[in-house]
Image 1 (tube, rainbow, N blue to C red):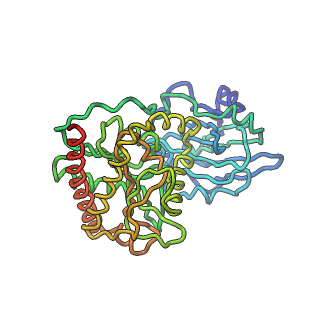
Image 2 (spheres, rainbow, N blue to C red; image 1 turned 120 degrees about the vertical axis):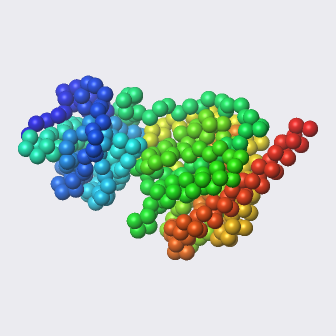
Image 3 (cartoon, helix red, strand yellow; image 1 turned 90 degrees about the vertical axis):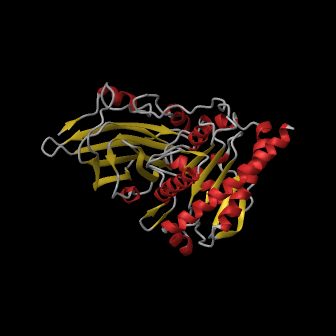
Length: 411
């Protein structure tokens, strides 16, 4: 058995950050390693300590860091396959309160451990069996003070691993004669599966529907359509907003099919931004959607400040009425397509993904996976096609109204 943990790696462990193994950029293996649940665990030890042990089919590059608000430990891996594994089954809750794992972006996976108490990385080591080639990652954690935890927390800046920085540059100028630029945002993705029912995950369903809606709009003509993700990857809420602005979007539509524990919600709803939720269900949905960034291990410490920088009150005075008009037209188009719509189809809440100051933005719950009727509809390609046509009709009518409104403003 040989150890792959470098001295430089272990020297930084006490600071809460373990960089990727090796001194050069991690290579990308041709196939993913798999996690073996046998012998893998996350559990408490004595004397204020905890450990994470993961058995892997072969060694892979990794890095470890911690985050605050709330306290979390994050382990990134290159080419590690979590399919077929329920990370929660590996956990014996204690100092580690919950665990999530899955794809971060293609080629990268991530484990996020929610910590019940601040824990610092004591040691981290990957050993390899010389006979089988299998690897074991062992991470020992020890209790630390909140100030010490906060001082060592943060995402290490490394272009070999990190996503591109979020751009908050001004919107590009719009060409009035160009096609309407629609940014479709399939909810969730990667490590964040969204709602789940049986084997169906919201992230996969919304990606399929976004592609179907994209095809419907392109076939109709007069539209340019951009997806915030076109595969199973994680995209932070902040990045989704930034992508719409960078694309010069005329419209931003976030697509979801959530689930509520009371099981009473059913039918499609269209949401617009409001600091005060229109109802308890909308407030609950907004909290669930924003929690996806926490589950994914996103650093939220500066997000509020950065997003606030684009929440320009003057711009929103114009954008909010346009967003509400967009929502009303979408409700009408979807209703005419057969819905079914919720009895209160137009709602509002503080959805972070709708916080662009200068892009009319709505969030559509096309149905609820917790509703048996909606669940059947969501799996029916013909039903989804009808709904896509209804959304397209709503966009058609809104575009005409919005152009007329702008004409009056210019006069």
